[in-house]
Length: 259
Length: 301
Image (cartoon, rainbow over the protein chains, first blue to last red):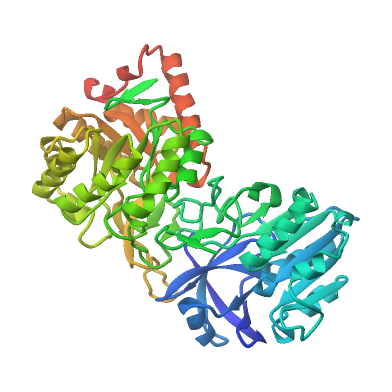
């Protein structure tokens, strides 16, 4: 499918480096955790997790996202998707723990909302560098309890999401959904592995994508060879045992780069 | 077991170059879980390349358009991937290589030899990488020189992958054979382009690229048919194969084996499915050997 033309209907500044772009197309069949390929014409096309079925929430990190930040309401970009495998929705009455770090809250917010709508109890650990960087705190608060951590201690527990997580009874949860910077996810992974609850957990991975549709193989992870763009981006904790998570990823040329 | 240029394959389906071949683990997965008789790596060159900007591949109604731009970590960066694939795959692993001239091809081939690839496939057919691929593969003299240069430094089979974007593909096939190729692989993608009419921008980051998938199968069948007549060495058929019926058709045109690329989009285990389908077909039709159908169309006059 060729990119569809999406016109920006609204831009929300979430924090100095994070903006939400609402567009005039609704992905009605979106599964929370799925991503779209966002084409900033003449520049590049990059994967972005959907933060709603009609929005992406973007951190300014490179050339493509900087160009995206120059766009105004009424401007447009190309969109392909939604692609990949999302988070598994809970059954009614299940207890879900969402662990979101930084812009990782973007794909987890629609998941938390869908989980709540499915009749699950949803609690969230929301981490960021400082109070001003906390993303979608209100959306998570509307659903259930939110534990906040900030690196600088400007709100909630001073430290990382794992500093909150280590004091929680993870055994009380049926599902644990995780997305954030890789260092954070690998710390969470180790903690859940120690507590022997990996089979309840799902992690959303970020890797360099080229084709985005499962053909080229640029985003395959070791040792399984699974494709992040098609077999993921959401993987069960069990699938990631002994994987490259937290150790290295590959750049656009396929060279290994330490995390 | 099935023999192709001396390699033993459990079935005549091979993963095409540039598809799921960036990492050793991915190649291993296609061989084991996917059931491929052999796997070909991503094309590897003399220096690291990041490739073209995205979009680098889009799906069309009739196939796929791509312009990856030969991204690769160089032969030194790829050695550990090739070693992993070789150690685990239990199927032949063929190293696809490219360079800008005969000596670069020889350098890359020699550089990968420590990982012991079962064969080399020379990419002289990528349609969208300046100075590489089809820039060499449309010149018969260069194709012969490149083939001979690699044959000089390796003692495993050398396959040459041809571009259909030439006036007469048999002329290039003959050049490869003269250079000492053990087989030719046909075809690489056809030049193609798509334009976003909302903005006027070409869709691919490289503006244009190569077409694969369903749309190119009849082109591939004709190229394989002609090469089968023109050459002594085996022809490996590739282009738009996604089912056992496609594979049988390609073999009847003259293909000794087939490669499958874009069709992994639907399922990674397409290889075992095609392999089993061919077996069932041979049995149903009473063919004692797969060789009976290779080039069969040439006899039906």
